[in-house]
Length: 305
Image 1 (spheres, rainbow, N blue to C red):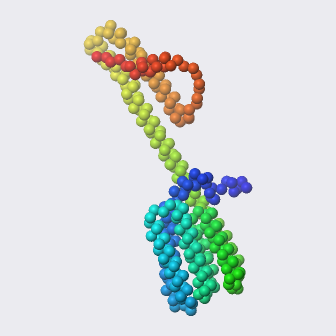
Image 2 (cartoon, helix red, strand yellow):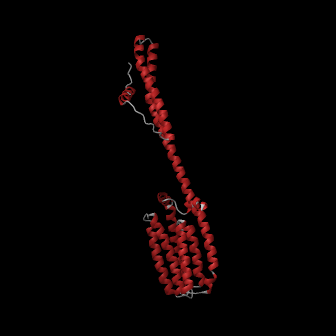
C-alpha cells in the first residue's frame, strides 16, 4: 500500500493540480490527436484500395471505411479549432472506437481474414498507450473495453479457433504495453512537477529581485538625503561659508535625520527577514500619537541653504 500511495500521482493528481496538468500537456495531446487521426485517415485509405483486390465483400468495406474517413477528416478539421483538453480526449476515444468498430463490422460481414482483427487490436493497444496522448487511466480503460469487446465477439458472435488461440498472446502483450505506459506516464508527470518547481524558483528569484530594487530605491533616496546634508555642511565649514553657531544649530536636526535613518535601516532588515522567513505576529499595546509623530519627523527632513 505504501508503494501505491507513493506513486499515486501516476494515476492522477489532486483536482486542482490535475487541471493544471491538463493545460500543461494540452499542446502535446493535440499533436497526438492529429497523429492518431492522420494514421486513421491514411490507414483507412490504404486498406480501402487494398481490400478492393481481395476476396471480400467490398460493399461492406466501402461503406464502413467511407464513414470512418468522413468522421476522421471532420475530426482533423475540428482539431484546428482550439479544442479543450476534454474535447481532445473525446476525439481520441472516438478515433479508437471508429477503428475497432469498423474492424468488428468488416470482420463479421465482409469475410476479412481472422488475423486482421487481432493485428488491429494489437495496434490499438500500442497507439492508445504510446501515441494517443491519453492519460494512462483513460488508455487503460479504453484498451480494457476493446479487449472485452473482442472476447465477447470471439465467444458469442464469431467463434473462430484462431481467435481463441490468440488469447494468451494478447494478454501478455496487454500487460507488457501497459507496464510501458506506466513508465511513460510517470515521466510525463515528473516533467510537469519539475516544470512547476522551476517556475516556483523563477517566481522566487523575481520576488527577491523586486525586493532588492525596492531596498535600493529606498536607500538611494532616504539614506542619501542626510548624507548629502552632512556633506554640504562640512563643505561649507571648510570654505568658511558657514559659521560655527549656524553649524551647531543644525546639529539637532541632522541628528534627528540620522536617527530616522537608523530606524529605517533596522526596519528594512526586519522587513527583508520577514519576506524570506515569513511574518511572526507579536501583539503589543502602542501609543498611536507617538507613532504618528515619529512618522511625521521621519518625512520632515530639514532643508539647508
